Amino acid sequence: MTQAAVVADANVLLDALLDAADQGDAARKALTGYTIAGPEHLQIETFQVIRRLLLANAVGQQAAQSAVTHLGQLQIQTIATPLLQERMWQLRENLTGYDAAYVATAEYLDIDLLTRDSGIHAAPGVMCTVSYP
Image 1 (cartoon, rainbow, N blue to C red):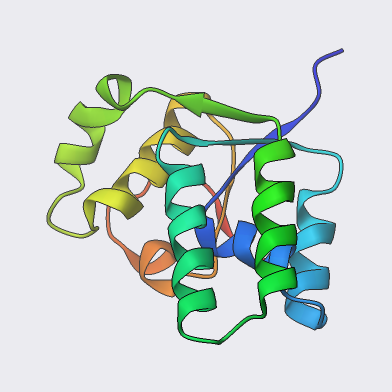
Image 2: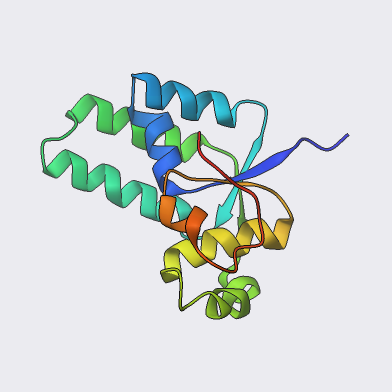
């Protein structure tokens, strides 16, 4: 039996890795039991935000280091950009390239997308289920 998968965007991963409160709990619960999938930039985007938060003193050194360590341990199924580009281009009027990559990944794999980004949920033309953790 194949384990279920879900596309998680960087915000969801950040919540799961850094947020000790309700939002983090919700993200961790939403990811439990699923294989995480995403476009190939997912881990780099998540890493960059952790770095930015650390440099802005929004998170401490220990929390940032722990988040980066856990990020590196995640088994994430990534989809190569060339497989997504045509669909990303079709979504260019309504989504950024980064957001279009998450949608295209979910559509390509025919699975749900987890995001806190209300713009993705409201964007015309999205053909995957978008959920908020």
